[in-house]
Amino acid sequence: FRMDDLACGYQYHDEGLIPADCAKAIDTALKHAGFTWDEVEIDDIYVFVTPTYDEPVVEVEFEVRDVDYDYIVGANTLRIYQWLIDQ
Image (cartoon, rainbow, N blue to C red; front, side):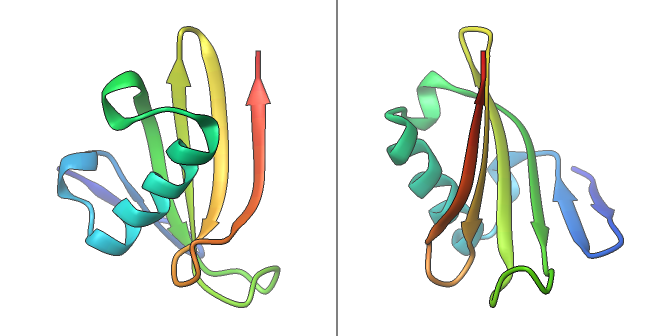
């Protein structure tokens, strides 16, 4: 397990060890995309604070069948702020 410090937050490298609030944000992104944890490969999980949003956010990047998904979800409200699907 390694958690990297970033300029405005941190990054998890093992989704099995993330806190419950981050897991809920990831659940929200996966549900929005129509997938479950078993169907995706989680690439990166970032937690950060930025003036752009009124709360800490979780950015989750995952892959399904060579399609990349990138979601930013509010850590407190579970609001999806943005998503990108890169085919």
